[in-house]
Length: 417
Ligand code: SF4
Ligand code: SF4
Image (cartoon, rainbow, N blue to C red; front, side, top):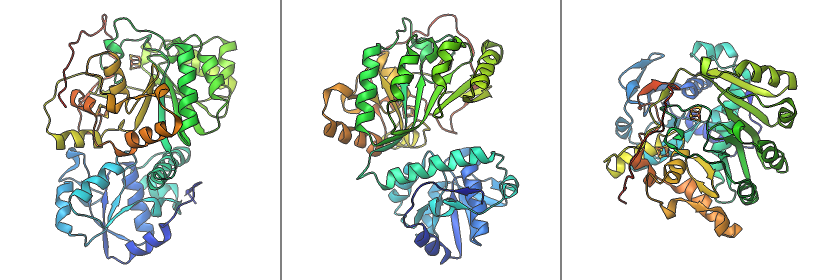
């Protein structure tokens, strides 16, 4: 068996039977998850009629011999063919999209993926070259998310939270999606504030799958070891990820603190700019700390604060397709829904939208749970999206990590609600 879910799933057996009662299905999503879903459908003997995707560049192409149509064409199906959602990051938006079209014969893919009785070669044939470890990581997270959505009225389980330790970075990248290139006078997070925010957040939510410790460059934060030790006091999270750019390798005594099964170093390899990458990797190997160092050559063009003039529907689409639309971010005692919103607001480049920002110390636990629930599960778009280029497959690509000499100058954008 290629994959077996560690989670408990409900309705999956019934859903498999319901789908099998039809002659054909449509698969919504043509990325790696879509390919895995097609392989799983074939194994179950279920026929795929055609594919659809929100990525416009895929429209009217053929993938694995299946035509890819724009989602708006699904309306014609009149609920006569089941639609299987096969996207890990944007399936909540797909549900909303289809509901607005009156389509209800819609299924998440948990009934196909909870047990994947396939061989790795079956996925290679579909163009999926993930390792078994990566398959497990990706499907685990997807199924965790599906369950979080299904149980949202009784539990507060979220995908991830970014803990911003500093606005400082050892690089100054022109297209930084966290907007570090705009900070003229970057500051560190106040340590006591940071600890307080961690305590409030972790004591409010039920579970967070991944805590991402980042900046700027989090290894520039002098007390990072104390923050990490503090996080070890909590058990209600799965993974503690350090996002770093390979320019800094902390001293051996400081590295020791990262020796923990939950810790994972996600290193962006920017070639020569990541000047201490080899040293850092050899330290991580020596200490047996998990890591991944991926060469980064291009980014999406999403690190700009811009004026847009989109209609409401378009803002919903940009938000719905965005890979950070549930990217909770803690910055200076406030909880935001995405890192762009956090930093654009912190830079005072856009107005402070009180309804979309949670001041972590201003509420009791029950109030906070309600506020986080609504922000995380109910938002259809943020006011900040109106000043953002979006983060999805429709956004143009740019060269990664082009360095700037001076911070980017900007004007306040007076976004109208
Ligand atoms: S993208 Fe560049 S500027 Fe932004 S945090 Fe990473 S290394 Fe720093
Ligand atoms: S502001 Fe909106 S579109 Fe931009 S990254 Fe955040 S959620 Fe995505």
